[in-house]
Image (cartoon, rainbow, N blue to C red; front, side):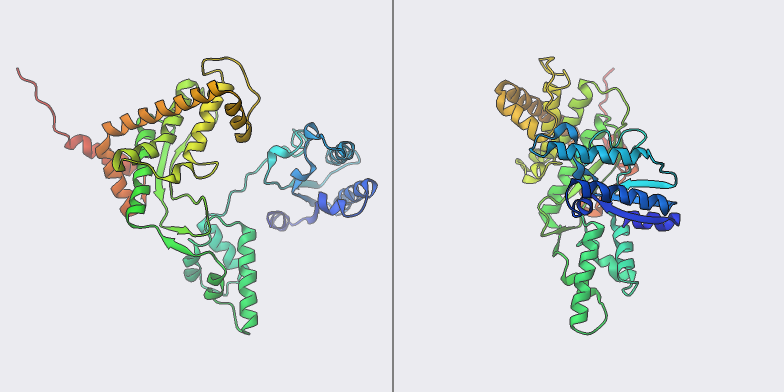
Length: 392
């Protein structure tokens, strides 16, 4: 969809391709012929965009260990030749799409080839409404489509397109026009986040907010909690506190410890107010515990910020987990770092309990906090705090 829109906006021709399409032509010689043929067609149709979908399917030559290694290497090398444009590539822009950029051979994305990288996030609520409006040919009012925002949270453009196709199928079967109900029937059921569950999320996110702002963890951007949850989503985020962290900065041991303390602060806030913690902090690879454990392990095993200067090549979560299981001393040190930062976060929250409660009440009621509002609440509490008088 992006490549098609880009070609239309630029008023150029589009040539769509993929390794799968090229492989379907036959053996290696046929594949290479089809690949070079599409590049040649793009040159003849220039100005044009040659779009290669799922470009990570080429893989990386460094990781080829299978029986067909030579075959895969030749395919990657042929693509590199085409990208270099030895026969000329004037007027042809090559665009690749992937969900796994780490799996792409570094030579493909180096300078001079596919060197400009644009991350396309999941569509926001306004984006989803705009996509649905277009897919339904403006046949349903925007004011009605807004009702679908909770049910479409986390959906991609492809997911939304499928939902519209399913809805049209229902309408055709009943020989009538498309309706909002048709769309709703194919979307996941949503429930309201309310009551004690909503308050617990507010407490959790207020904990991140208090500790993050107290430690000066980047630039605080705001906090919000969701009003609805999809029943089909295992790891849907109930809320989040947002901090803008500079990508280029000196990151010492204290920086990473602060990061872990902020990650542990949600659990610490729940423990402080409720006496226990919920399961939300450990749900998924981007959860608080997952991130904190990843950082603590990296500090101890890769960054030279533990008791050892030894460097490990382990980088992914699975590699780091294997490293912890194979080195029980490392595992104990990581657990120690997490426990220390949990206690540190708890101490900060105990010292700012009134602020924690005020912020959580505001979150519960309004669903969001702005930096200005947090500053306003903190300032009001400081002014209201009784001052101790000194005796002369």
